[in-house]
Image (tube, rainbow, N blue to C red; front, side):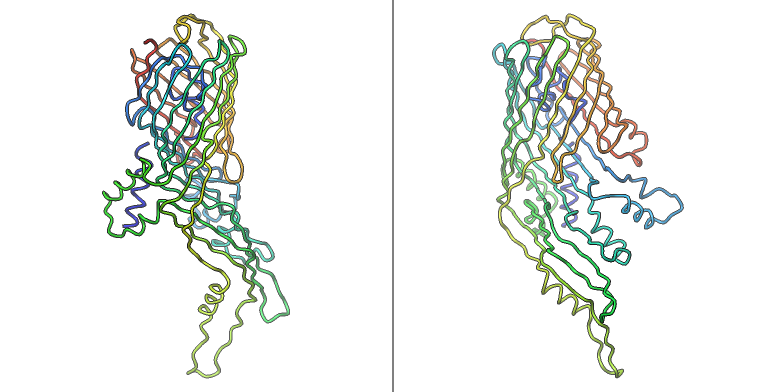
Length: 468
């Protein structure tokens, strides 16, 4: 049953398919631009999304290893390939999965300068650093690392499944400046977090003593916090349908809750040149229900076990492993607690510049019915996400072509910690008021997913109106 629950959580997270989406940032005729920057300049007067289909987003990445590195048939056995990968990975390498689906989305113009938007989306975010030292210790042992401490602060990971309810307001201050903000309420479905761990394991060479080596565990302290997991794990008789109903109920503030805000602005320096920036998910989750925390801590110093053999055949041997286990239990404590804890949402930030060429007169501004618009837009976006060991980052340059008032595309080149050759493409088409868009990032990786360090996809369909 536990396996079924885990699989259910996985498929609930992935089948209903964020982080930063540079291919949708600054796209002024897509409502999703307001989710990236609530102060974005927009050119529509109303919108509403097709429920569950207005935005589907999925992104996965690994900085240090690909599936090909592990499973490629290169004449070596898989253990040798895994060992090679472990040696090449460091404690700053990481793995990331992010999924988002827009459940509902709508908005409309308010007055001559304002635009209100609201909706709800479900999000999954999993992020883990590679535990370099513990992995080497587990896979290779300590024989080749005498005197070298294995650090357990390499263990650092977070994961969450939640529903986000939001409402935002975009306001055009004047012909140059647009500002906006968004309030978010979080409904937690599942959370796991293990950060700020401590401790080292070191083996010392001690010639001349009874044993050759001394093993020392110093200030070991590993803490894993969870919410939304214990109740599912303990319900042995819960069916898959019951587990699905329980997960769904948690989407509507049935479990843990939180609050956050987004803020942003767009400033048109000249008719052709603009700058803008946003900060998203400045928020906190309060985990107060269905809590289970596991802590393993302590220090231990052992000179090993001296093997003593009985002189007579009928005497029993000494249970060395039982003795060692008792020593570990006596010095390293494993406790469970149920205390509340809080977590920060992964803070996301974007900043960009944009330059337009090829002036055309099209009805593109919700304040003024006819205003010059530039058909070619060239821009650069700097984006990042705060993580336990520091921010991840990315830089994207793009050419955005507005072919006409019904079709536009964007081609982009970017680099980040996953790839230095990240090419992307976005296309958005509108038939009357019906809009469809698709964006693929790191399209080179799609030619060979086994060898790709990252891949992302966004698509959606909705109704967008330019006139009331």
